[in-house]
Image (cartoon, rainbow, N blue to C red; front, top):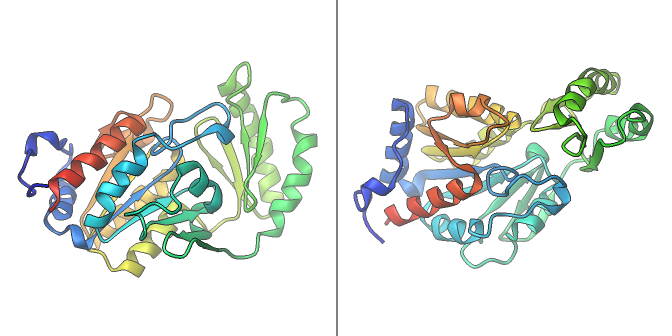
Amino acid sequence: MGSPHTHATDLPEPATEQGRDGLRALLARPGGAVVALDFDGTLAPIVADPRQARAHPGAVPALTALAPKVAAVAVITGRPAAVAVRYGGFADVPGLDRLVVLGHYGAERWDAATGEITAPDPHPGVAEVRAALPALLTGFQDAWVEDKGFAVAVHTRRAADPQAAFEALRTPLGDLATRHGLIVEPGRLVLELRPPGIDKGVALKRYVRETGVEAVLYAGDDLGDLPAYAAVGDLRADGTPGLLVCSGSDEVTELRDRADLVVPGPEGVVHLLHTLAAHLP
C-alpha cells in the first residue's frame, strides 16, 4: 500500500495553502476524514440525456479502494438517491458498505449498510410547478423536463442554441418558482426548481457534524456545488482542514476559480481517488 510519503510525486499539489493543509490532514489522519463527491460531472460524465448518465467505469473501483481507509465516503447529488445509486452501481458492492448517498441535496439519504432510503414528504410547490411547466415551455420544444420527485429540472442541452434557451428561460422559471415557494438552481444548461433551505452545503455540514470528522475533501463540477464549497470554507474557519477539488470543464468556471485542485473531469477524479488510496496505509 505505502505510507503517505510513498510515490509523493503521484499526488497533485493543491494550488492554495489551505488546500495543501487539507490534503496533509487527510493523509495524516485518514481515519478522521470524509470524502464527499458530487455525481453528475464528477463521478459520471455529463451526457445530453441525464437518463443515460452512468458513473465512470473506474469510479466504483476507486471508491472501493479508498472507502475502507477513510472515516466516510458520501455522494451528494441533486438526483433522487435511488437514481444515483442505480446509475452509480453503488448497491451491494464489497468495500462500500459504509457509503452514503445524500440525494435531493441531502433531503434523501441512502445507506449502503441497509439499502434503505429515508426522505421527508415532498414540497407541495413541486407538484404545482410540474403541472404548470408544459404551458410555460410551449415555445421551447427542445427543452427537456426531468422529474426528480422532490424537484423539477429543465434541461436546454438539446436545443439548437442551448445557452440562448437557458438564458431565455431563467426569468420565467424564476417567476414560476417564486409563485410556488420554490427556488431556481442554475447548472450546466439546466435550471432546477426545488424547495428552499436544502443544498449541498447544508447536507455536507450536517454529515460532517454527524460523523465528527477532522478533515474533509469535496469534489464537484457545477454551480450547485458552490454551497458545498462555501461549507468547506466555513469548516476551515472553524478549524477543520478541507480540500476543494474541481472536476474541470469549460462550461462552468466558477468552481475552477475557487478550487484548491483542478482535475480533468470524472477521469481525473477517479485517478485522484485511486492515488489517494495508494498513499494511505
